[in-house]
Image 1: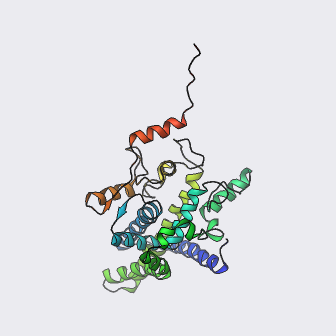
Image 2: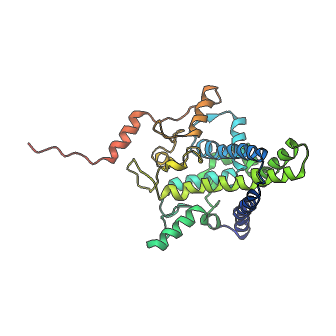
Image 3: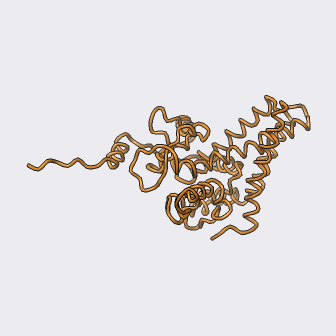
Length: 307
């Protein structure tokens, strides 16, 4: 299936409007039009919606890396929806399809499948994986095939259906925070809408999309996998740990993508904290033994000398 004209136009708006917000923000920043209140609202909105994607949409809903109470599950789904990357069930179906056909025909956003050879093929593949797929394969994975568990959840179906309203709330909340915390200043409200709304959406979008593009093309690899996934250390913090993407493809259900002490994984830390206060349980972990077994598969067998 391909996206409809309406879906394509909505996705174009979702890409272009935050970009225009960044352009306007850059002009205003040149004139020192950025207050501590704007920064605080942008940081809170960034962390909340990014956690909604990494902990909510990805590790909980897609891979079931841990279990939690229904109100926490739905709250994370709403926060993920506020990142404006599509409805929860569509997002999960796309990502599960990505893992089913990783870097092969059928992967919704591989930089390697069907892009062609040479420099031109490389650039086309990276464009498709980062943004181009939004206009062709985004949201087209079968929910009945790839996300039947979420379709069976009435609460998740309501959140999925409410996505347009949640997306509007993602812009309205920073505006209201700026308006209220400034004592009713309309200018402060609009400034918070710009920085905590459009600019924040732009940042969360492109950090997330970088996992699809950069983390399937550049970086390091540790395990012997059939796909092209990589670990990209400099993306680890802004992506809240998602950039240990090669680790994730080696152990998709693990709640922790950072497998070394120095592999910073804020999303994993949050899940660990939730477990300690009994907001999460059945947390999936990679034992040292499992990791050693996976690493051993990547090493060539040592031949025993003939007697």
